[in-house]
Image (cartoon, rainbow, N blue to C red; front, top):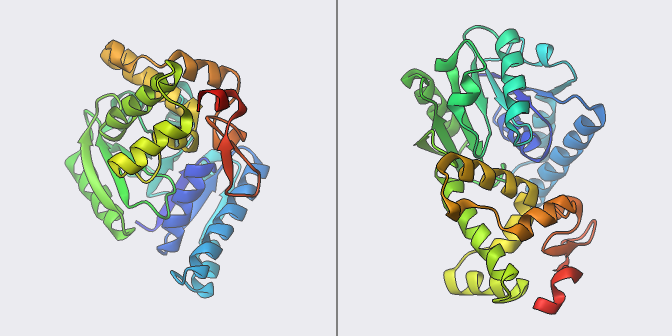
Length: 298
C-alpha cells in the first residue's frame, strides 16, 4: 500500500500520519478544521526534530516525510484514491459510524477501512458500510512514532486476506502487530482500564494520595508511569468513554466508572490536554505537580 488516508489530525491522527509518511507512503490527512491541520503539521515537524536530535533520522528524512503529507478539509477528496483509510477521530460511536458511512461512499471499492478505536466494536463500525469484510481495527498506541504495538482487531466479517495485509503493513512500519478479536476493550483496554479505574477508586476512598498510588505502581510493579499519571496522559474523558463501553458491553459492576472520574470529566479536568487532571501541567514544560484538589490527600 502506498496511498493512505488518515481521518482526524489530533494526537493519534497526526502520529499515524507521521509514521506512514516517514516510511515512504503518501498520506492524505483530513480534518474539518484548517487550524487543527496546521497544528498537526507543526506537531509532526516538532516530533521529527526530536528524532533528529536523538540521531534516529536525518534532516533529509524529515524533509521527505513532510513532503509525503497532504492536508484536506473534504473527506471525499481525502479518501478518493486511498488504498487504506484509517479513522482516528474521537472515541464516540456515533461520530465513527458517520465517518465510516462517508468513507465507504467515497473510497475506492477495494480500499480497506480501518479504525484506531480503543474500545468500540469493529463489527458495529463495519455495519455502517457495504464492505464489512474490508473493515478492521488498527489500534496504535500513543505516542505513535515511539510505541511498537499495533492491536489489530478482526470484526465478525473481516476477511483473512485483509487481516494478513494489515499485519504485513504494520510490520513494514516497524511495528509489532497483535491480532485480537472483537470484544469490548479488546485486550489492551480490557486489562488497562480496570487497573486505572481501581487506582482512581483507591484515591476516591482515601487509601492513599496521587503520588503515593503512582509511586507504589512505578517502584513496586516496575510500571514506567503510574496509573493516575497515565490516565491524565490518555485523557480522563477517553478513559471514561472506554469504561462505559466495557460496562455496557459486559454488564459487570467491576467495570463501572468511579464517581470521581465522572465528576472530573464533567468539570473538564481531562488531564494533560486540559492542563489539569490528577496532576497540573505547566504549558510548554514537562513539569507537573499534584492538582490542588488532591494535595490534602497526598
